[in-house]
Length: 249
Image 1 (cartoon, one colour):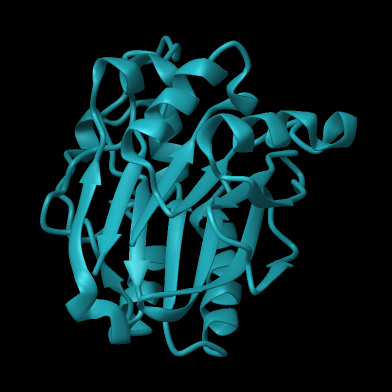
Image 2 (cartoon, one colour; image 1 turned 135 degrees about the vertical axis):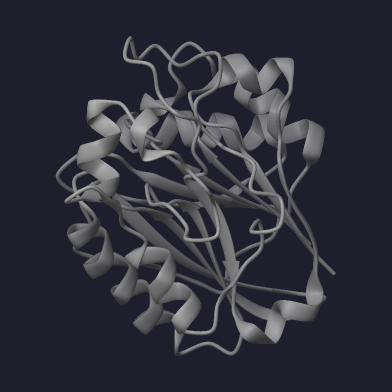
């Protein structure tokens, strides 16, 4: 079972063909998109067209919060159920699917860009919701750093210092909460940054960071085959984030 997560940046405007080609190349069973902005407009036309273009005709969308950033989850098979978690600064969408691995709850998360304090409240809500399920995947843009990854804080730009540090120390509470709850960080061994791509237009030099993660609950630990960051010429220009692909079998 392949699950892809992709922050497509501001609805993917002007880049939808590239994004669709990336998805079709890897053909995931589940696709979690962050920043599906405006995809609820005009009777969900954009989402419907994207689903048709990628062969993923089943989808649900979580409305955005303060940042008006939507989360959309696509599938090749119908969902058993869907639920929007609130309140979130961006968005979080829970879907339940069933396949060869049994029933799995997939949480498509896009945590707050404002502060680690805000992100902790949001991830605690996700962790609590996951307790209803035997097997869960929490995947998306966490906008948080892991204690397992090494960064030189002296190289952080001003924006990174505000978002990820306090009193000169990098904060790791969000990922720490997930690990403490028994979730496994599927990309911890690779430590490959997911931002920025060559598309990035921020004039302030930024330290490459791993902000996109896939976590699985303990029961899926032995099912993890790989978790890769997809870095290609296409993904370098399709968004400011690289997509990640989790494979379970």
